[in-house]
Length: 402
Ligand SMILES: Nc1ncnc2c1ncn2[C@@H]1O[C@H](COP(=O)(O)OP(=O)(O)OP(=O)(O)O)[C@@H](O)[C@H]1O
Image (cartoon, rainbow, N blue to C red):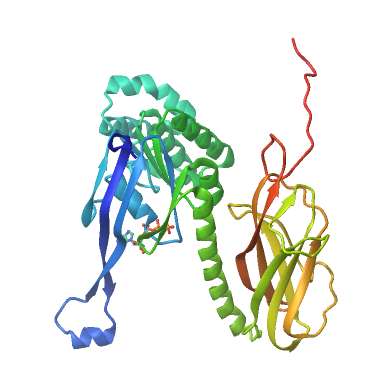
């Protein structure tokens, strides 16, 4: 990236928060006379460095508490880093959590003028934009109500309308869009697309991984305040889903143990994709062809309670097909030691691309206990100029013209 193409530069940014906790009674007695508060340091961001290219759309993703909002706020200049620097070129408009940016006692109208003024607009310029902002927000008569009486959806509507109408070079958006209703979310997304087309730089924090796949050209995965992945959205989302799956299984393991369901010591030892024709292991099919998936599990003792599952996912982890031995009405059979279950999928009318196969193990009573998210992969080759995960035979013709 050329120096002149950098819109935002984050260099070695760390953010330390001081957390104050009430001391326990014992601690109060031991430390008698001193403050009743514990002070703990907490590193929300740990030496984060990123260069964001002008005109790009970046998604910041990661589990709860991983530091996404903190990073976004340091980029927007809303909070100062404890160490490191943030530089940006151009006007930044920020759409942060509810409550940030608007004064609760002022009306919607007054807040529009206040926000525009902070971003360097004259009253005359805001007058010129006002009708459009109001129209976009859909707030109507409530524009003259104090914003403390707004619902969270109304609040976001107005905040987004202001943010996109002040002609920002950089727009930073934190999760908030999720509180708008569906038509408004669509409208916001269309507007974000307009800004993309105009070459604006956009940084989004979101938990909607589909949104990241749809809008972003780069995604950054944060975990415990550090960057664990920085690259194309597809691999970033897969990385994050893999982590979520590990967390889910770890958590599920605890619950299942509490229920007394014996799930432990079973492992999925091998997953193979095979040809239905000659049983060879394969990694590619033509669109419309079928395949077999063999899942091998290692059962430590004889049981008829086992369930084996498999699913096919797109590159961003959307499950497009899934089944398991129970759904296929496979009779419970007592199995022991190394056991292979074979799924046969006769025909897969998939579009061109790479697909991932997950494999899972569980019990009839306890549900799914473990899963390997990307146990195997295969590609589908299709000679088609159409796009999408399914393959369809399509034709087109004019049926009416003036
Ligand atoms: N003002 C603050 N004082 C103390 N700790 C804070 C403060 N702001 C954030 N934190 C802590 O820093 C960590 C990172 O928070 P942050 O809001 O950046 O995470 P996040 O990835 O955006 O999470 P989420 O997905 O839940 O919105 C959290 O553990 C949070 O509790």
